[in-house]
Length: 112
Image (cartoon, rainbow, N blue to C red; front, side):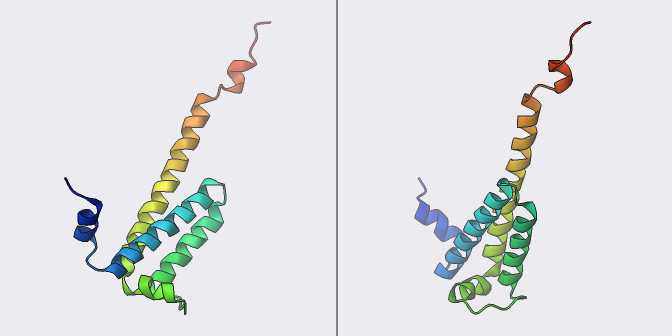
């Protein structure tokens, strides 16, 4: 039986790679939460800002960003996967909830 430690060690070979991936996952969750609560433009702007910071296009002096910029592949991958997953779930959730509501034309019809 595989443990969490063996799975993580097969994916990430160093601790900075693991931390970069964790930060990407958490950033993607933040973007997804903003999108879920209706802040679509700010969430997509934040997604773009995170991506540009990770690639080093926008300079930053924070110590945490050094880890992200040293291993941008893990951060960007998990950021995009998590964000797109949350956005997709929101779109599916909205369509399912609209399909379950009765239509106005069906509710208000009477034979006169």
